[in-house]
Image (cartoon, rainbow, N blue to C red; front, side, top):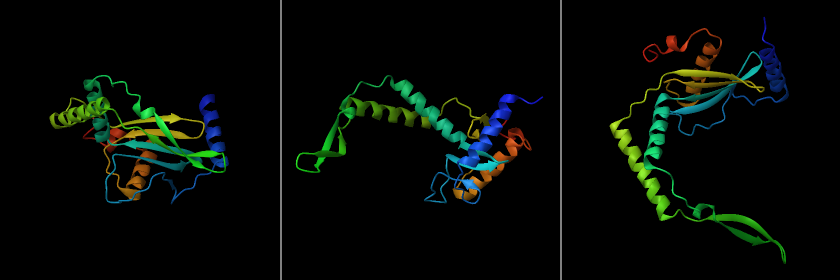
Length: 194
């Protein structure tokens, strides 16, 4: 028996893709530029078409999740952020556009207070210490697939070396196999999945 909700999503996805076409580069929607094609990335976004529906992949390397956890723990250990109203006090810079009219052309933001600078320096010191010592945090390969009215969203965390457009293409090939259930994460990454 078919699920009416999923059938409705399938119809809406195809309609959305027909009415709002993507500009694809060699079959891929790549929202980012790669100025240095030899540099490895810790995260990336890429889209492709599968059976007339959009698939958007939000990939992150486990090392990036580890570094995010270090940053989260550093902010937690540093305590609450001090109140500072200085960054929100914007000074408007105006330009004359007539005899009596002015137009805002730029905003000048005030500098952080010494209290805020000291707080962020403390967070940086804690992050460096936690990175040196290491933390007890394990990141395993994971994949979450969600259906939206515009297409399918895939949140993927796997240890791949993504470098430039070729790495993104390999990522898309892996996601295509995972979505079609031709392979599983345990088969693709056996040493890490235990």
